[in-house]
Image (cartoon, rainbow, N blue to C red; front, side, top):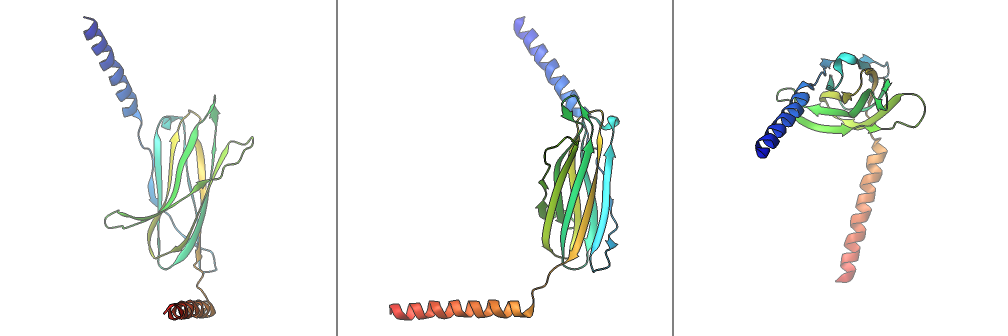
Length: 195
C-alpha cells in the first residue's frame, strides 16, 4: 500500500511539473526590418519589443531580418528596461546575437555573439553590445532571447549600425607582400647556411 501511495504521489508531482512547463511558451516575433541610409554608404535600423503581465513565465526569441548586398561592418547595442517584482527582474535578456543564415534552408551560416555590459547602478536597465566586422553579402537577423519572469514585464530597444567595410589601401598590400618576401628570403638564407 505504501508503494502505491508513493508511486501515485510521484505521478501527481510529475504531472504538475510537466503541466507548469507546458504553459510556458515562446512568445517571440520574426519580422523584416528596413535599413535606412546613413548618407555615408551605410545603414541604420531601430527596433524593439514590449512584454507585459500576460506574457509572464514565457520565453521569447525575437528575430529582426535584413539583407546586405555587399561587404559591411556592423555594430549594434540593446538596452532593456524592466520593473522589479520583489527580488527578480521582470524582463531578463538572455542572449543577443547577429546571425547569417541561408534563406532557402534556414541553415545558420555564422553567429556573432553579443556581450552583456550591464554595469551597476540604481536604474533598472540592462545593456548588451555586439560588433561584427567583415560581414559578407547575404541574409542576416539580429536575435534577442529572453524571459518574462515577473508580472511587470518590460521593454527593450536596439540600434543597429551598418558601415562600409574598411578596404586596405594598396600600400598596405605592398608592405605585406614585401614583408612576406623578406621572411621567405631570410628562411631560405638560413637553410642555405645549414647545408
